[in-house]
Length: 332
Ligand SMILES: C[S@@+](CC[C@H](N)C(=O)[O-])C[C@H]1O[C@@H](n2cnc3c(N)ncnc32)[C@H](O)[C@@H]1O
Image (cartoon, rainbow, N blue to C red; front, side):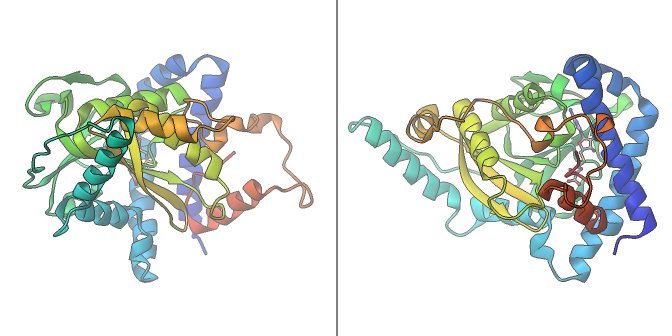
């Protein structure tokens, strides 16, 4: 069962997310974000709480219960290894698949692939907080955050970062900050529990477009999103993410439900037509190019009375369960 401290840390994180969403509803997401970014104390408290929760509770619980395969960090590492470094990297399998799709569009399609050369996997961890991937030697990590909890994490707002045709990331060491990030440079970009921090679907979309710009063709975007509901409960939402990202030029190549999160890998396709074809074939009536999260559809908690036992929905039960599991994000 969760300790008092764990509940307090979760509560603090939840309240920051909630406050930001409330303020975006009352003004607009851009204004709410600017105000949020001015609040140095709140950002610092959030960073401290997140760091402690992740390293003292979540990661440790996974180790103790021998469920390391259930850990989002390990999942990202394993996915990158099999995609880039396996004796037969998955990357080449997806080339073959894309070629087949292109030939279905145009029977005369031919493309001469080159080997995807890689020494270390260049990984951009957006919303890194405490730079968990620094511990793995196969990565050359750029860790960024609006509230770094470790000195190896650079200050950077991914919603407001310059994306340039430069040959490496540009830093301003005196400010511990990123000046600009390069186009078509990273092999892998990680959004671990990032998107639900952002109060509006447009901001989430902006992050995904930025990721597309910064990834090498055939690079991958790994998205971890909180999800404690049963397998399939968020299936429509996740399928809509797939639809939306396909429209940008990503192909979803893996999705896996772990105990408290859904993990996905999207490949920056060599040919945007691959995503467009997926959209054309798979579009269902409800699908829209928008990145919603469950919280977008909830009423303001301040206006709601606490539900009685009979009124409680699955989401409320998940709230209660998560408070004890220590994952704070399935909030109202
Ligand atoms: C829930 S924490 C996740 C931390 C870490 N990735 C993990 O999985 O444990 C979300 C992080 O995203 C950061 N963040 C939110 N918006 C951001 C933005 N626009 N640019 C960079 N970092 C951002 C927050 O400061 C916070 O550290």
